Image (cartoon, rainbow, N blue to C red; front, side, top):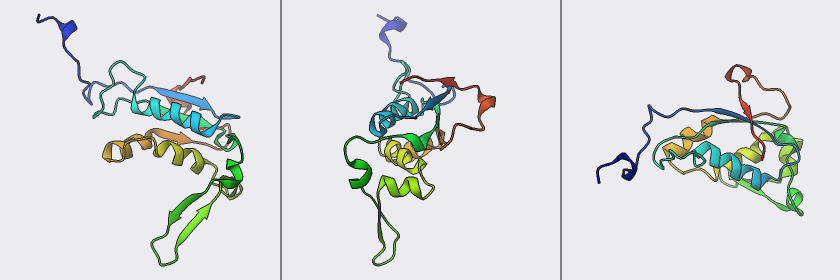
Length: 148
């Protein structure tokens, strides 16, 4: 059989059409929200998904400061980073990040961990736009509201 229905179509970078979605994160649980965002950014929700091609869409997240954790994670979870200097290990809880004007870092860290750890993943994370309030500068792209 040489019909098209028996051939696997592999998406090409030039043929991919990227959409824009907007998500309101108010009251959403961080892990569940990050999973949905990562799925959209990778393009796994499309039938044309190809693992080695960036087939994903752009995602705008508003109210990123109003996400929530279950249990005691807000006080007990720790984000650890290293400055590169001796004794430079730094720890921060989600409560610390929200209080020190970096509430977007919570969702960005969660989504980044769910993307590939290579140049494709670094390209995909650039399609994520996080905003602490309800305003965003992407009205020209006419993003579609996405319900979770």
